[in-house]
Structures are given as C-alpha cells and as structure tokens.
Image: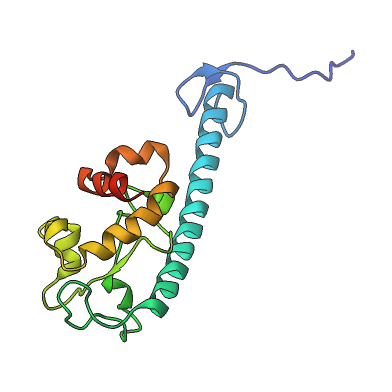
Length: 170
C-alpha cells in the first residue's frame, strides 16, 4: 500500500466566521489579509504620532528661547520660567490640529499668558476677537510669513480676516 504525501485540506468553520480553508491563525485568506494589513497601518500610525510629538516638543523648546516672559496681549507674566509648563504660554496662531502642515512653523506662535487673564485659552476659544488683541499686528506679521507654507487643503479653514490682511500686505 502506498501513501500520498499530499495533505488534503478541508474546509471548516473558522474564527473569522467564514466556512473556508484555514489560511492563517484560523482565519480565511481574505480576513487574515485584511486584519494583518489593518494592524500594520495602526502600528505605523502610532510610530508617526510618537515622532510628531517629539518634533512638536522640540519646536516648543525652540520657541521658549524666543519668549520674552510677558504676554503679548496683556503684558502679564507668561510661563517662560516654568520648566514643566512653559509651553502653556505658546499659542499657535493657526491651530496645530487644523493646520498640521504648519504646526511646527517657526512663526506659527504668539506668547500669551495661560494663568491670570488666560489670554491663551481665550484666544484658542475665540473669546477674544483677533482684531481686539493688542498683539494683532504681530499675529498678522507672522501669519503673512506662515501662509505660503499652509497646505492647499487646509487654506479653506483660515479665518477670513487673516486672508484679507494677507491679500493687502503680500
């Protein structure tokens, strides 16, 4: 009697819910490929997020060197001297969440107090209107330098007042 060395695979109910041949880890080929690809993408995103955070923290440390120690809006003390919270007084002119292309641009910031009058928080939450800020000229000056670096798909999110000043001063 001779034996065939070919192993005959049988279809069975798999972990993924399919009735098919076992491809990998008790999953069919389709689901194994989809899950493994999704896991690779997630892992890649986590690595990029870590790099982005490190790059942003380096950017904050560079801006600290340029800080004056006073709020550009109300002249109250900023958090420049606080080693743990100095970055609280570095307000992005164009929010890093909405404008990732210029999140670490050297001119995308203004020094605003976080404690006391809370100019940073009020600026971020649009409690203070841009035009009413004492540092409006500084913001416009820096925005004009930033604008050419803003990604095309992000430009539609820029406040109209900044676009108008840019067009007048370019």
